[in-house]
Structures are given as C-alpha cells and as structure tokens.
Length: 123
Image (cartoon, rainbow, N blue to C red; front, top):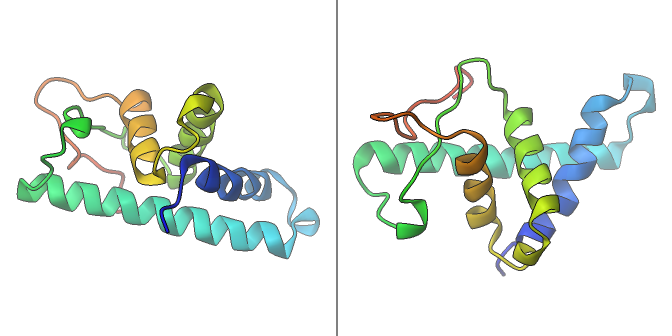
C-alpha cells in the first residue's frame, strides 16, 4: 500500500498539534501520530541524504534537492510539509515520499554547489 500525501498529512497535523500543546493537554493519540510522522519523515530525509551522497539519486523528480539551515529541526520539516500539502490539494493522491520531498525542495532550496548532504545536526 502506498502512503499518499493526504495520509501523511492526516498523521502529521495531529503531531504538530501535540508539539504546540502544554504537556497536560496532550493526548496519547497525538503522541502516537508524532512518532509515526517523525519516524516516516526522518527516514525519508536520512535515505535521501545517503542516496544523494552515494550518487544514487537519479529520479528526475528530484533534479533539485534540499538544504537545511543548521538550526532546522525535524518538526520544521513537518510544518513545511503540512503547509505545502494544504497549498497543493491537487497532490493529495501523490505518494507521500514524493510530496514530502517536493515540500522540502520548495521550503529549503539549495544554493549553487549544495545538495541533500547538508543536514541538521540531528541526523
């Protein structure tokens, strides 16, 4: 089963809500969504960085790549994706990995000579 942009958006929105709430107002369901969302997105980022460094990122969809400022946190990636998904409802059936990466490319463009190997310290 392919996870779509809509599926990932439905997981990541509650995850962001969890982060915005005071600890006593957080729910177990939101915590589960946070783990699912961050696990998925961190896995995608780590994989793309590794494939890019190894020279295996050949999909023309990812002709451009993303570069994170040093202060970028995984929750920033998620916020970028959720915002991108809301702004691109026509992409709701797109595979989540593609939508997530397109959101990162849009939100964190690289300068000349940079590539996906520029990642936050948390990687």
